Length: 237
Image (cartoon, rainbow, N blue to C red; front, side, top):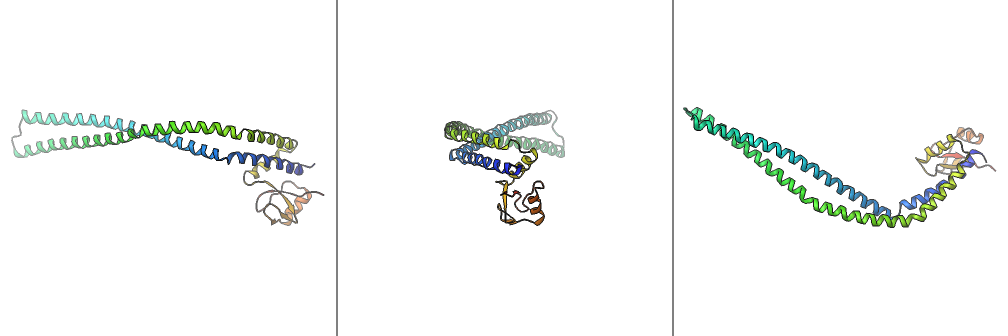
């Protein structure tokens, strides 16, 4: 058996193994598992985001609290100056009043921001119990489904393992270059090989150029269909 014939025989067993693997992946239970897993991951990410937002809010609140204390100290200092050394002109009095009002507005602005931070933080924190409950509940569901899925696919996985071993036996003796070409084409299209019949690729029913036909007939290396990319071969006899 020449290399192309051997590769063709390998492909038959390889595709059978792929079909079993596809059957495992298409299990309705597996799809539910993946949806449940994705839901848990989203909830975990939301929980993490809440932690990060709360941490940022706490840091900002600390900064604002320091700023409020500083502004209050300034306000007290202005008031003390007013008590100890009252302004002697109307212009100086207005300037001191403006300074006092500026400090008060600054404090009010900071206090408003603090209230907004507390409000948003409380909103974030209020979501935590629900998220935690969702994660715990869905994790329990996931574990139950995973056990059922493992049991459901146990025989199919053994069947796939047996079929992969059979395909591996067929691959013994095939050149690394040919196997590399086969796997490269398979990553793009499956099955990765097609027979040549009447000058046409049976994979996509496209007539091949004369130059390609001559190369295939003379066994000059690997020839791929110019349309679908499959490795072409001609059956002998």
